[in-house]
Image (cartoon, rainbow, N blue to C red; front, side, top):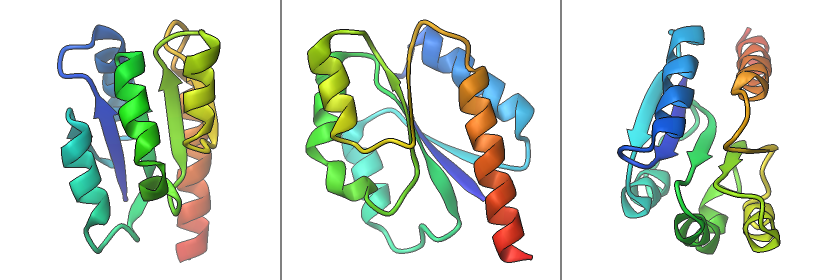
Length: 128
């Protein structure tokens, strides 16, 4: 199973989230993307059936807007979103992505890990 991860290249919050996810779920193949265009290219490729979901950790409101503008790419995937702020416009852009989970970047990554664990358990039970 794969988890697609979009995060800023040197974003310390996103890096900490990625490290936690990799540590708690070593069986997941985490594919890291630092540019919206490369993530969009990957999502257009055939072969996302083994993808558990996509974890989006945009570092800025502008990056979130770029992701939201490509929202249809995420229609068939579980989206876990870490918002870069609490402004109403940021939250509104986040909702455009129809996330399964939306949290703020100033908290503990435990809720993200709990949802990833639940998604992986469901995926494994679907395969069995």
